[in-house]
Length: 129
Image: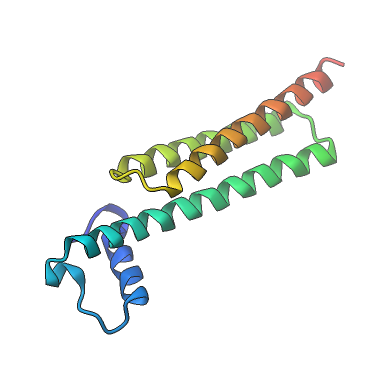
């Protein structure tokens, strides 16, 4: 059950932490338990993604507070958002059952884009002042 990036291994470990002493579901043939395992792995993925979105938004807030309105800083923040968007697409492709946690991730990614838009406006105003 190895998959790219150790996804199933991580899910297996998460399931064992939640169910100490229980037989592992892929040995029992328990479909519901396997689904729980899958959902737990996706929830962990989305949680990590949302945490990175929060870091990104905090970084933009710090740049605004410092009034660091340069084109170089804007380009750096655009690259960071591109990385978040690529990661979101990768997670979305793995989340075949559309985990409830994906909805929060969608909202957070949209908020990151909005924050970057506000920052870009401030940069353009500063550059053209």
